[in-house]
Image (cartoon, rainbow, N blue to C red; front, top):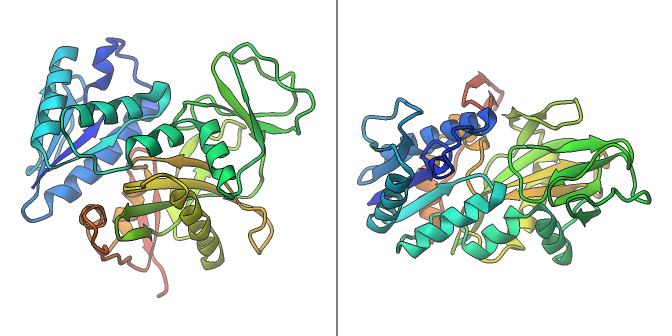
Length: 340
């Protein structure tokens, strides 16, 4: 079986723009995710892992991984289509910025490839922060109250502040800000303004397929406290009462999406009420997330193999070691033993 792991940032996707100005945070997280996933696929008997690499960003890869160097935008397009067609599955890891993730998924399918991940309907919804919130709210999933705003539009004076302003098509906390009042920002891109919800920032990943939804261990998110919510990594496990609430909310969010498949990550805020009545979903990532590097460090099984099982309609075997894990956006992992 051939698996194509396509990570847009390190795999040459930005060559098409010829900017060479990849945000450092996206480069670090993209590298960490593709290295971790490719290594796990390479360990599965009978699986041949392929990936593309921008020739400007050298990396050390597992010896069993087939690396295809990309030097031009034309070479990027041809190699992407060739690998998507020849491989049995393609995992797409790309930022939602400018609908890059959706565009990559479309190219894979147009080339005859099969996505090991959510389909285009789910990707389109989850790539848009406001559309996601509206879709989940319509399904009865709790989300922060919010409004959509266009470029140049004034912030509404009658909204409840402090509030969170985020690009509708964003990723990695880029341009996310906590606003004290309606005079504190000017809009340059389509945005969502939503109520600030205090609590514990957490994430829960789901492996999805015909056999159902299978939650992984929920993680606490480490975010900057300067009002920009910069992602600084995460840690696991959560306290049991918080983990239960995160899983319950994550299940509802993923189940509300059309035909979820592969790996999805749900970001939540767990409020101060112990019964979870103030818990909300703030984002759904229809792709691999940086939490994967921490989850695989704690897993007693190969998570890439579990992802394949779920996608092929089998119940994945999931088991985690009794350890506490802290991980950074660049893939650095620290762990210590926990009581059983």
